Length: 300
Image (cartoon, rainbow, N blue to C red; front, side, top):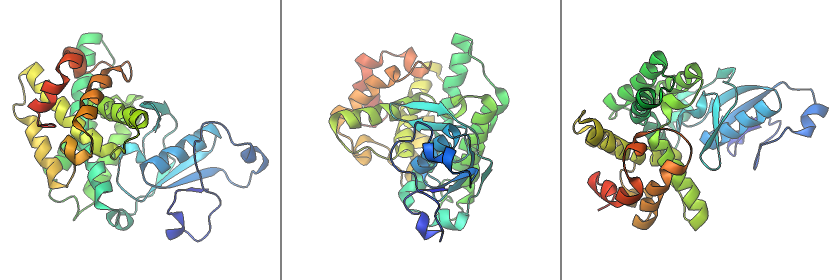
């Protein structure tokens, strides 16, 4: 079974196409035992849908990404509405044809870069939760996640000429989550910010940016706050911003296509998205959101 809008470009025979919401077992599966696995072919949301579909119907899952747009290509988690990550199974295999992936629209690659670089602040948030809330912290998973972010950042000018750098980083990020048994190694305050934008886009009917694009801007914000809080890594948020610029990823509200009003509201809402201890808990976000966004140049 294939999933995705562009499957016909890569396959002659299509057993089926997943559309809409996939939250419950498919009755047709119990009638038809001619297949035992689901192939998710496409970008991030397509693969997440196929992943959930396979999990709910107790089928094996094979991930075939056609774009390096986010780190869900090999993780045991899938994103659903409302900023929630649901546990599924890691794929049986990942088939990543770098020729096909390199032909994907550049904004999808930039989105994947933003998702990979967000591991920096995700790990910092995880450490904060360990130190202040005695939350489990896995050194190996954290190191693997951090290394993925470091490699893409060091090679920001080479991403489009060698897409394998980004693909390998996203795969490593996925593995880190599988090892940790949670999305913690790759999802912190920057992801809460992205999920907040998603929620507000539905409320106010504005077009949201790509997941990784939003996470990239969220990483700038979170790195800025970590720098203020810890007095370490001075100028780190600016380096992240420059790396995002290297791949053409958004670095501010205007480039995301989000109004000043909505991005301020998104930051205020972000700490409420889910019960996850992050750098947001160390600041009065409700009161200081506008000042924070101005400080890290996300708004003027």
